[in-house]
Amino acid sequence: MDAHDVVAELPCDRWSGPFGADDCRRAMAALEAGHVVSLPHLPFALAPEEIGFLTDRALDETRKNISFDPATGQCHGSGFEGERLAALTAMLERFGGEAEALVRGLLPGYAATLERARTSFRPAEIAGRTSTPRHDDKRLHVDAFPTRPMRGRRILRLFTNIAPDGVARQWRVGEPFADFAAQFLPRLRPMPPGQAWAMALLGLTRGRRSRYDHLMLGLHDAGKLDAAYQERAPRVALAFPPGVTWMCFTDAVLHAAMSGRCALEQTFHLPVEAMAEPARSPLRVLERLAGRALV
Ligand code: SIN
Ligand code: FE
Image 1 (tube, helix red, strand yellow):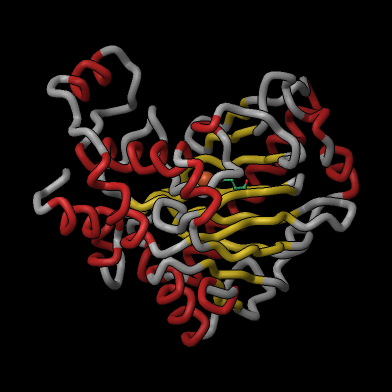
Image 2: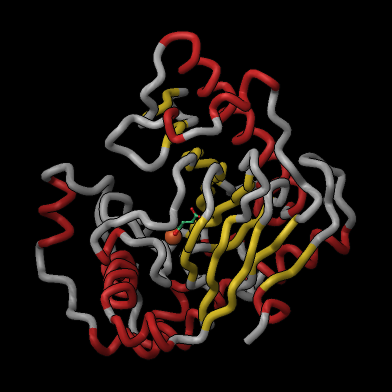
C-alpha cells in the first residue's frame, strides 16, 4: 500500500462552488471507495483576533476537543467565557458553514439528505497524549460512538489543519474496511437481548442501538485492543500540513491520528441510500458478512 492507493487529491481552492463536474465525480468515487479526499489548496482563513485561539489554553482542562452543536448554537469544552467564548463559537460556526457549502457543492448527490452534525476544534497536541486503549485514536480504528447510534447512516468527516507553526497532522490509514471486518467480525459477541432497549430507556444512547451499531462498536474496540493487529496491520502514513483540508468516511476508513495540533473538524451524517454505490457502505458489507439484515 502507498499513498496513491488511499488518497485522491483535488485542486479546489474555494469553499463554495460551482465545482467542475470532473472534480465532483472524482470526490464521490474516491470517498465511496474508502479513500481520503485531500484538498491541498484549501486553507481556512482566520481573522487576526482568532489566531489567539490556537492554543490548548482554549480548552477546558478536562477536555481534548471543543465542540459546537449547530442545532443549539452552543459550544462545549472551552474554558473561555463571555466575549472570547462568543468569538470562538463564531469561528466554529463559520467553519461549519464553509465545510457544509463545500460538501454540498462538491457532492451534489449527497446534498438533499446530508445532515450537518457537530463541529470540533482540536487545539491540543496528539503525540504523547495518554488514554485508555479504547479511547486512543493513535490506534487504527473506524469511528463508532457508544452514545450515538447511527443505524447504518454514514459518518463523513472533514478536517482542516490550522496550526500556526507549520506542524503537519500525521495520520495513518489502514486496509480496506471489508478486509478488516472479515477478520474481526467472527470474534464479536451478539448483542445481548434487551440491551439496546434498556440503554435507550436509561438515556445512555440517543435513540436505540441497532445490530449494526453493536457490530461497529465491537469492531472499533476489537481493532484497537488487538496489539498484534496494531503492530502488523497494513498502513500508509499521511501528512496534512497547515492549509490543507481533507475528508473521508471515517466509519469505513481505518485511521489513526498520530501527531499534530490545531485542527478543525466537521462531521456529517448521510443515509446509505444517498450513495452512488450503497453496496460499499459498512452497513451493506457487514450485512453480507453476517448474512442478515442489521437495522
Ligand atoms: C480520529 O477521528 O480518530 C481523530 C482524527 C484527528 O483528530 O485528526
Ligand atoms: Fe476516529
